[in-house]
Length: 283
Image (cartoon, rainbow, N blue to C red; front, side, top):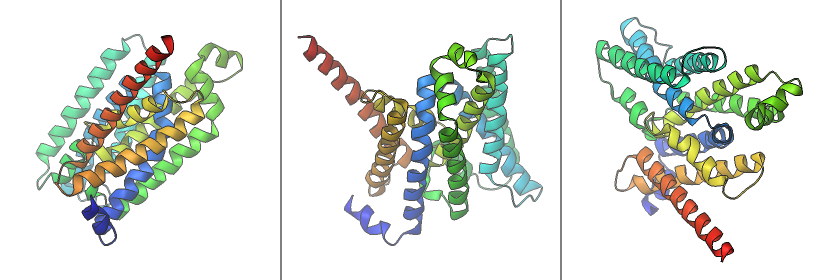
């Protein structure tokens, strides 16, 4: 691990990676707390896997049609927002089973991405890094985009904190108070979609739901209020992403997978400690 801190002072790649992890942790802690509280992690999973379709389409347009201003992250943002709004609309208004629609979008998004990748000439390493995660490939331009998304998500999350709180815990009470539950539910899903895109750069699509939910789930064992959960989840996320980057550096392990193993281990330890404490209190 000492090699990591030595290299950090000179390597711009490591500096970008560390900064990306810290920026992503803020959105992870805030939105992840809403996701865990509202119990919509399955929706976040569907949104996450739809983004591959947007990434593949963006790369296809960039390479084949010369849209040089377009990047996979732009495609991911568009696909994630569209998927979130479709799922939200079905959940609120549609007559179809929500889980069936999510499964359909999940499969269609992944399949569409694979088809676009297959039709795009060239090397696909950057798209595969979004699928499995490679935080070391985060560029300065991507870092700026991540920062903008993070700022947008945090601003909306804090600005409408009380309304989101009401929607997450008691929809009927929120309606009685005149809160537009449908609007804020869709807004919450849009925030979740943007956060999924941010976290994709850190751990990849396959592991993004773990990083979105586990830090908040861990924090929920130690605090009572939602804002406290957000703060603690942000700290936990920052610690595990930094530790994952440091531990994986020397043995050249996949950073995203290392981060999730650390987060999952911490979650299991938290559950075990909580049960032990309750058992000890009962005796």
